[in-house]
Image (cartoon, rainbow, N blue to C red; front, side, top):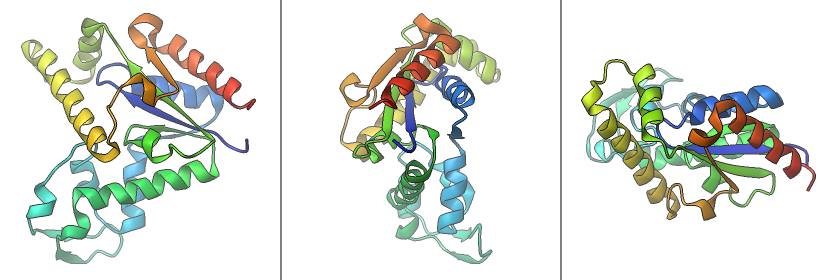
Length: 209
């Protein structure tokens, strides 16, 4: 196998990004998270702000509203149209993700990458979760100190719901359901480093195919 692409789905507050970043570091793989949005913006000429506003969330705002938008590439102002709906923004991200998987060793975080690359033989898909709500709250608290303590649990629940809704809509699958992933890892059991090492071992075995 010439190159391997690891896709990582994750619960909010599970440490999925940290695990993904550590795996990329250990293996020398290219890491893609928000970078996907930048590449999609460059490829499409659509403002990065627009991609960020609907990142992993299903928004109808851009399908119904006509607002002035500036292209990130050509600097022109034009009316927002159906070509920049959430669905078409997804198509641009899909194009970027496929190109990544085609040419390099990479770790791709979220954005339905496991489904987009489901027919690729060089892809290993992983879901990171945590069954310990308190540990998830600890992570979110450290990253978002502005959130009041009493709102942490609901904040996490809403974030997961947004990701689930986005994933389920675009894939017709159930976000986080084990049968859709090659491996599911609970960071409340293994921690970040051990979870990363476990995934690295899985990739090394995968490469022997």
